Amino acid sequence: MKHFNDKLCLITGAASGIGRATALALAGEGARLCLADLNQEALEATARRAESISGRTVVRRTLDIADEQAVFELAAEVQEREGAVDVVMNIAGISIWGTIENLESRHWRKLVEINLMGPVHVLRAFLPAMIERGRGGHVVNVSSAAGLFGLPWHAAYSATKFGLRGISEVLRFDLRHHDIGVSLVCPGGVDTGLVRTIDIVGVDREDPEVQAMTQRFQRHAVTSEKAAAAILKGVRRNRYMVFTSLDIRMGYWFQRKCAWPYEIAMRVLSTRVFGLARKLAAPK
Image (cartoon, one colour):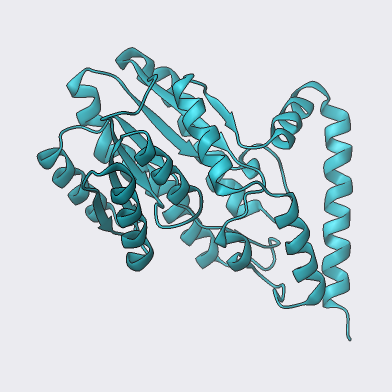
């Protein structure tokens, strides 16, 4: 897929962050858009902005991707109105971190329902029509650096992002027979609203040290617009692995080529994180 002009693109998580930036970038390239998100007000704002850029009417639907019926209803509506989509972009997701003793079943279930089963619902609802049409297409699944590395306190989140990575690895070969490309996006630090609202179970987000750590992360993070540009470039070049920043690309290379030093580095990172946790938990 060398261009997006007149291509019908579905984007979940389009109300903010990477999803919004990607939607607006695609609008600028003349794509036809179908946008979905749980936040109705922010989604409407994205859709209006996209329409002002492209001059095209944007299909939008407020829905929770964890709701299988709602996703299939959207697919039926889009396919009746516009036909099969050309590009499916699974960008919607949430993040919950915590140690195994602090994470509760509800945290695991929420992550699985949204981050893993949500994309599965989207793929099952939209891919059959793309395959049946027989004109190819592209799938974008947004995983995470936590879908590559064993980051501290990410057990539940990584379970979903590694899972999406596994699905993508299979579809990469399965969909090749239908001329449908697959891109697995592995962002590192991206400065989105999620950075300020992320749920870290057992940690006070208002603690000054946590606030300082968040600010350091934001200074290092790339913008949503830069991440969106990397995604569209990856689709154009039919790349499987798409990185939004150099550090994650280098980290992935380091993990594969230098296994023992990688393990040492992860041990050091884990020690530092748990040291901070003990400090925060200490009596004032």
